Length: 186
Image (cartoon, rainbow, N blue to C red):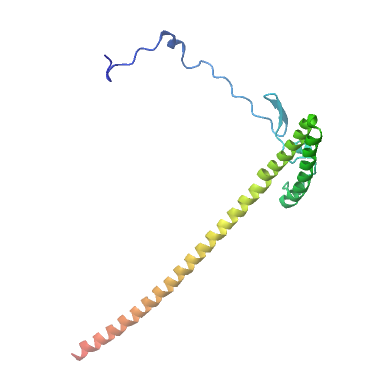
């Protein structure tokens, strides 16, 4: 009858075949910088998505031009307005094509896919970092204001302490003079 003190059975005989590998396979190569490469049956690139020569914009994913300034940053407000106008028009066109010619729905689905992909890229790579930076700046400003308030309160407390100390010094001088007078008189 098994109990909690019963030992585990010995490992099977084929267990001796398993052990530390003699040869560690080499690590896979890192993707090349600023280049295109094929992996898992798809072509990939390491260029920024807004690069008109190599990025997503070059692959034909963007139908409308992207607003990029000289620092490589996108103007989110201008891009969002343009995207909203064109996205609405393209969405209506694609839905009309689906209704008018259901057999060509795949083409319209591709257009909708590109539309939503553009919106996704804009939101994730332009607007969210901007929102995060704005939130960070607001939090820092709040912290600075709280620190200023604390410093002002400490300065007021220090001034009160200095005044109390000065009053105490004057009182002790007065007491010392009076005690000396009493000692001399008495």
